[in-house]
Image (cartoon, rainbow, N blue to C red):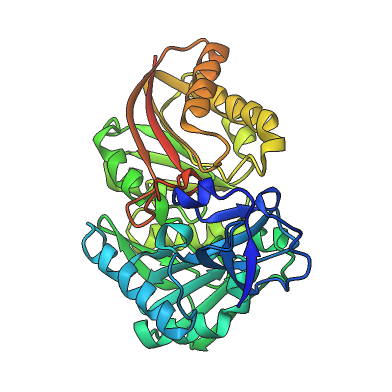
Length: 387
């Protein structure tokens, strides 16, 4: 295992798991993408074991702070540790995030559980290089009916990796059925967004019913497969219009509505979210859920992203009755909590409305935040009363 010298190691010593290119003592260009390395300080003292990518701004990522072999047994130990953490959490056993990358000390690896189907994302060159060991460990530890690889994230493009999705082991026969707060939901692990479902919003969706006006009429924007809309209907809403641009996602959403006997309460429309909002009369809705995909891809797009969030939420606020509920989210890491709140305040001023923050949530506890790495906290969800 070749050494890689670090010129500035203070962040690493404080628990961070990334080493940026400007923190290295010399160029990493002599290394292969994904190559295992021993990280050392300028005096040659051991710091950690990790992997390197000379073509990425994040040049190295830490796997262990001990000198150890990165083999199948290493991954088995990490999986067992992740299982022990989730076993102590108030999760629905049939579906949850088992491994959340850096937060589980496995940077670049995400693993979600959907009943007997395991879906893994390999998002970095290091995890791609270690793929045979990762797959072997997952199969031995979890014994899944199907092991699906979703190697199609934008993060892989930044790492210079090809995109693909495949069933790596076992058989996958159509959608997988999971449960959430009394609902039955179908998930498409091979062709859905991310790993097929947004597990990170589960606790926020389940909290929605505490604030919904009973018998109210509302909208669910960016509905995907309908999880927010169906929870709203299940928890007391009389009528929900669920909107998404993806016809494929809406097909599954309609199946989910039928599966739960909610087809009469939830109506689905393939449309742009802003256009659907504009088609509604001002002050006509009791509640709106706005859970868009990330609107900020990088720090360079922060200002543009803030404008998009402000425009979306201002339009939502203008369509709500006085005293209506806006459940709005941002999964953009660059849109920090304070910035998001500022954007919502500006949206309220633009809409001429007064807003009060009633409740705030984030990613579920199966997506834990590593305090040494603020990058592991990304989801903000606010419930606002709009007057």
